[in-house]
Length: 167
Image 1: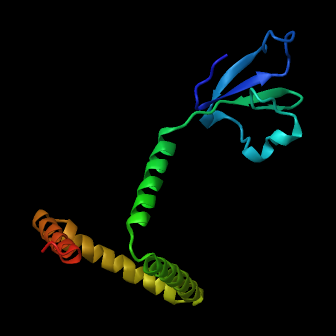
Image 2 (image 1 turned 30 degrees about the horizontal axis):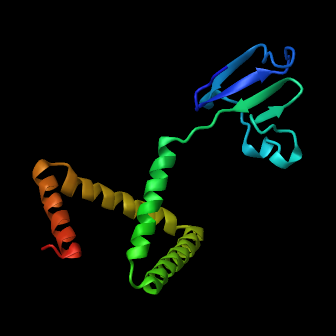
């Protein structure tokens, strides 16, 4: 029996004679498969898994999982390769690491500050109101009409030019 890489083969434990396969087996799409996480699978060292198939034996059924490299895994590998190449090209690794650490420290501190402000009874509601009013003004000023959208895009391009130095 063959299943796609995104399906789980659910096989009833009613077996035929050795070598004849399984009776009453079917494939279940990954989205419909019951919540069997990797924590519910026995370890390879326990001896309950053969080297040819990965299966979980329960009194009522056995489950075999089909595996195949997905396109998201390949994209993640490409992304990690680009990061590694960029890191290798970096001259001052200590400064980059320090900036990364400082960014994490600022993120942690700002999270603490926001949590402290959120505990005050009136300030969160006030800040929500300010955010709603500013968002409404921004939509009216820059997004509602076409000439205003063009002005916003021009400002964004100017700012990008100043940052990248391609002015």
